[in-house]
Image (cartoon, rainbow, N blue to C red; front, side):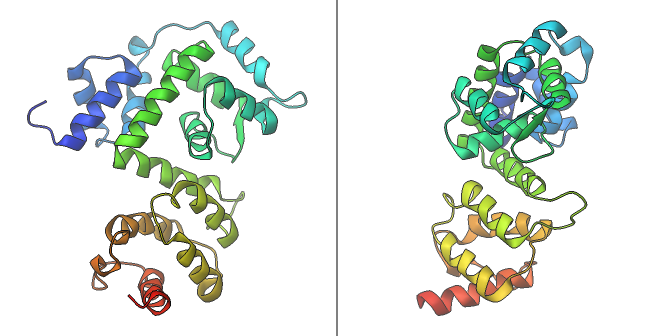
Length: 246
């Protein structure tokens, strides 16, 4: 791995922890997947020769243990019960669980998403799922690019069916979970949006605001207004300086 960057080496380690594959396979799949963890892991598990055989009956029983009484999905108190059993105790990791299952609806895991994901990954027990989520948490804590993948995913969770953009109120609630801990002045951002914007948030703005936070969190003067930023972020920087005197 000597020729890989430090970020790529972290992703190789993460890929191996998830798939239990060899280093050479990890590098190969990651290269083909443009070094995106989720895409590369999906590609790996899409090859039947890489997947440990699991019992469909076992997965059905596992799903039935957590499913809603009136529908073929896991939601509400049942999804919290699942999270508790796999030692997930904060909202960020609850979102990470939804991400792992490729959930399309906030707070819900469909039967198909549940069965397909666990089959694809060769997981047939709560203890194995707990181990997988523990590895995912480690990667989110240590790898910025993996965290950004989760961050981008949460935007789509916030969209109502057939909605192009996420409403401002929903975007703020999502930001409170996935970004507030990384941006010490998030409340000023929310205040600015409510007073000066009050419109839905586009996916482009959502993605680029994460990059802005990485640059400006410690010092707003690191922000370069000549860069390819949305006008909304330019306006926020001016608002921020007016409010803080910085």
